[in-house]
Amino acid sequence: MLSLIDSHNHFDDASFDRDRDAAYQRARARGVVAQVLAAVSARLWPQLKTVAARFVGLYPSYGLHPVYLAEHRLEHLDLLDDWLLRERPVAVGECGLDYYLPDLDPAAQAEYFTAQLQLARRHGLPAIIHARHAVDQVVKLVRRYPGVRGVVHSFSGSEEQAQRLLDLGILLSFGGPLTYSRATRLRGVIRYLPLDGFMLETDAPDQPLSSHRGARNEPAFLPEILECVAELRGGDPAEIAAATTANARRLFGILDDAPPRAH
Image (cartoon, rainbow, N blue to C red):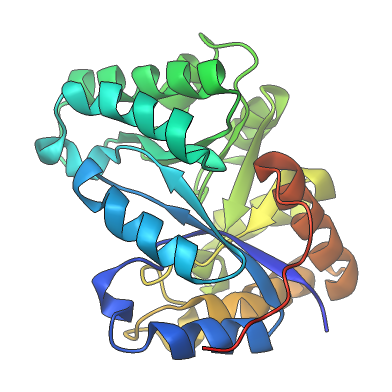
């Protein structure tokens, strides 16, 4: 069986409360050996910590998501600094910019994003970046912090934007949106990328695949994203699985497959 890493999801979300154990086992049965759980607000960090600690192969990332801007306070940045030092997560985030939603103040978003880039550099951690309708501005801000590593999750930009991010040492990750036939630009980007430039994700419970539209997304669907990528690239699924898993291990410092345990 191929070993896969879900490089971005929200497995701590309340939609998994009723069947989290079963969803975890489904993912393990399909070769998903690790998951990176991205936090969205300080209020939810304790829940994410609890979920990640409960299951083998779940890795926490703590941050302040731009869509939750109304919840954030500047003191949360100091709190995040403490959490990063004490908890030793695999990344900072989910952080970034969202210019799709009109009520989110761009200046305030940038303040929180750049502060989290500073924290990522200070703690030697990669940043998990949200960039919705804001890739150019994300590139501009990341350039101010040389040496910061990271990933733009659920990338939806152009080939040119992809290359600019890769040139900065920022990886890209892809999930459910890639499986829709209407996503022609996105499908073109995945054909172009080098194997060491991208990872796979589900963003569960969000962004369901075309084969699961209208349903809750979950980590067990990651092999279907792999199959889509292999078909679009005309490549060997095993080679793509090995490369994307290696990319995730390298970026997040995930060293070894963890054996499943009973619940």
